[in-house]
Image 1 (cartoon, one colour):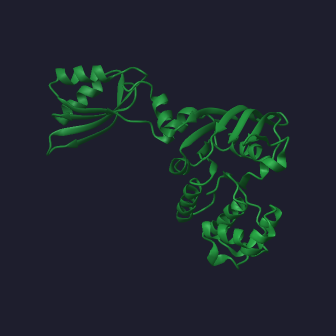
Image 2 (cartoon, one colour; image 1 turned 60 degrees about the vertical axis):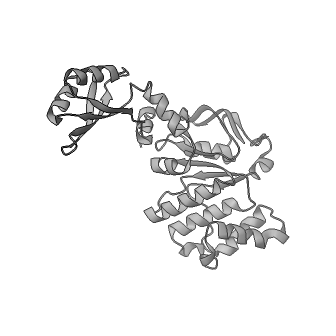
Image 3 (cartoon, helix red, strand yellow; image 1 turned 30 degrees about the vertical axis):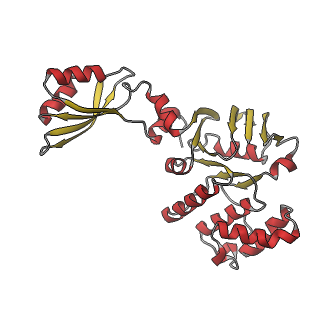
Length: 315
């Protein structure tokens, strides 16, 4: 649905985006994740045609955004980080204006406005001035304007920026619902935002793609083999002896250690100091100390750990 090829954008001597390639399939919900200044918003602006690329190309459903901008932009609903809302209009007046601007047939405008109003749950503020709405409701109005015309692609740049926790949860729920009917591209530097809404992640760092995959596959790739990732152990025996035995092993560190005196077991989380497989060393050390291992299982990296592993830019 969205295809970017060798996409680059310069601002003078500054390289904001440097030759990135990606393909987003129809119906996917994809998150662009990266630190502030990594190039996320610039990429959003290139996808929507708001900015022209310095080199490379973007196509929406096979239509080049530069060569045929009117046709391509008809397929896109865009919510920028700072929505351009007319604060002196009521919600209905603004949405009616947007439907006219997007050339929705006059006979369908009323039903179109009613439809998007219901989808984003702003019916109760329909006659209020936009300037008097809370930040959360203004963000909903911004989503509503993006939905006018029912475009197959939605581009949402930092959709929960500045919202309170309750508003963030509400907007996330809206986005998850929209993902059932649209191709959604969401940019954010907030990790829970991406984790809660997206099935595919593209991590951008310093204008380049650092990784592109599902959260699960990113974790597996960064973890290496199952023995070179953090391991969770359940061991029966004396807690002090278990801790001492693990602590003596040179290739790992103890990240967490909990005891259950009543059950006579300890739960330990260990992490290799490099990419070596430590399972065999742990097994023989515990066997030698006569401390039976009841469970040894790998622990996937969290999205936060993936992010820190792949990004170098600072906020």
